View 1 (cartoon, rainbow, N blue to C red):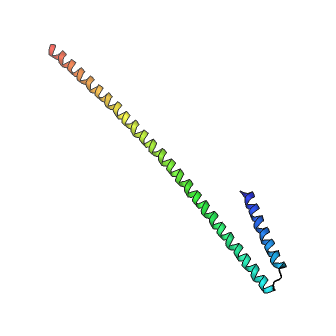
View 2 (cartoon, one colour; view 1 turned 30 degrees about the horizontal axis):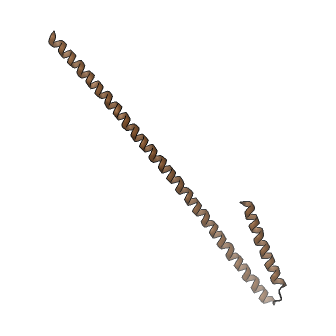
View 3 (cartoon, rainbow, N blue to C red; view 1 turned 180 degrees about the vertical axis):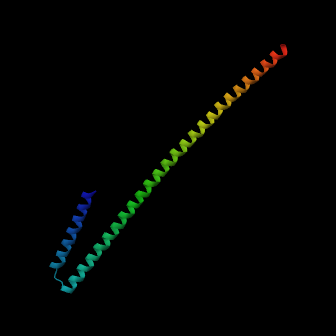
Length: 121
């Protein structure tokens, strides 16, 4: 990226220098020459501003897209983890209920056995 910037800057400087030399060597009066040089420099400045604004806009768009991608990826992973946690919670509840029911049945069975033993004694 730095090499490209240097090449572009060198080309712009070379073009500006070439244009300035062309204007200096042209058969114009001093006032016309200064006016032409000022117009050319103003055009270069405007062009540079436009390119800088376009580059800034491109960087801003790239950053916004990167943030959106990261958010969507994070949201998807969060939703996936939330679903897994919900499923695991349901599974744990089911196992706990099974064990509670088994314990209740065991207590009822033991109670019935004690009751029958007391009745036979």
